[in-house]
Image: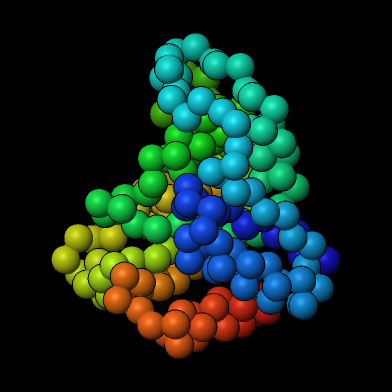
Amino acid sequence: MRKIVILNGHPNPTSFNVGLVEAYAKGAQANGASVKIITIGHLVFDPNLRFGYQKRMELEPDLVQAIDDIKWADHLVWIHPVWWGGLPALMKGFIDRTFLPGITYQYRENSMLWDKLLTGKTAHIITTLDQPGWYYRLMYGRPSVNQLKKATLQFCGISKVEVTYIGIVRQSTLLQREKWLKRVEKLAMR
């Protein structure tokens, strides 16, 4: 049985991203997967890595549970909007507080190299935009995808990371949103 964790990075509990999370969960469960959902906006934690990496902050219970869920999963699905070309602040804070040395990677002593502690997992980034995905890639170089895919997930050992763009959300009709929800449900069934 495939073990999937879906991470909702949109802080608004009534956003279209919630519908995408539900659609992915529905498709994955219909395909026999075990699914857990982490709604980052519902977690109680300080998103500010107050001391950088010089001093470890104590992890709040919600972060301990999230880390356990991430370790449990075979496949991580990140669903989030792109704001100002990047990740929502709360989602970035979640990554800062959970993707830590000894948890998702570990630098080797006296070396520039590191051990990737999330090897064997796969991921899918589903990001909503107020511009076409092709425009985001060509005009801006897709900074949020580069940050999450390359500088976070692949850095920690997740080598296979798929990306799906959903947009233009701001100008979308109800019919278009229904098509996107069905598309995401089908993506989960692969």
